[in-house]
Each structure stands twice: as structure tokens, then as C-alpha cells.
Length: 172
Image (cartoon, rainbow, N blue to C red; front, top):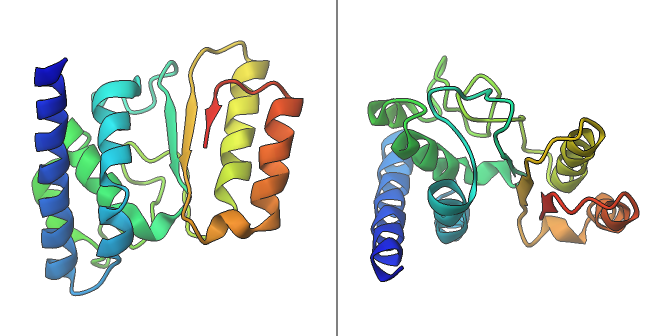
């Protein structure tokens, strides 16, 4: 267990370094929101979630939705280190035609849904979790939200709807 924690710590540090390098090379971006999410994303992608970089649309994968899409450098770094695409692709952050735009896009391997409209994420994740329940799937849906957006009404509506639909596969 102790060795596993050390490895997660090292991976989180690699992700932090990549976030700084990506946003510095791009000359824009939101490193603060990305850096503040590093431990959560590291834990999910390298310990908790079931996913397969060789088969990004694997039906039994867990789903991750980055509601605060402006923090996408943390997601891109985790996806690259997981093997969804080459690390060199990170240096194309926010470039025209790149698969790594300023907000997550479904054209990026490993990204489930586009995001960026703050306050929408938990509702989207709830829909994904409900679809999983209806289809009798055992995968989970993880939604990472920002502190500001959780004040939005539709976040609270989704939070209240989740127990109504018995969505024990939704983590937000």
C-alpha cells in the first residue's frame, strides 16, 4: 500500500509538471484549476477507474466528466500518461486543429463528453449514470465540478434527482 501511494504521488507530480509546461507553451490556459484537481484526477485514472487506453470506447469502462472544462490540462496530462495518446501531443494544447482544445472535446481519445458550460456537468453525468442503470451496466460515472459552479440550480436539481433514481453509480 505504501509503495502504491508513493507511485500515485510521483504520477501526480508528473501531471503537475505537464500542466505547467502545457499552459506555458500554449501561452494561455487555466493552470490553477488544473493544478487544484491533480490529486483527484490522478487517483481516479491511476487507482480507481476502470478504463482501457487501447480501447477508449470499451463498453465496461467507467466514465469521467470534467464539468469544469477549463481545467482540461489536468485531464489531458492524465490521458497522455495513461496511454490514450502520445505525450508529445500535449504540446499542441489550444492550437488550431489540435485534439487538445481549451475545453474537452469528444474528438480527444478518452474524453466522454464536451464540457465548458459551467453548471451542466452533474446533469450530464446523471444522465450517463441513469443510462447505465437502465442498461444494467455496472460501470460508474465520476463528475469533477468546480467550486463556483456548484451554486448553480441545475447542479442541485441533479444532486436531488440522483437518490430519487437510486444512482449509486454516480460520484460527483
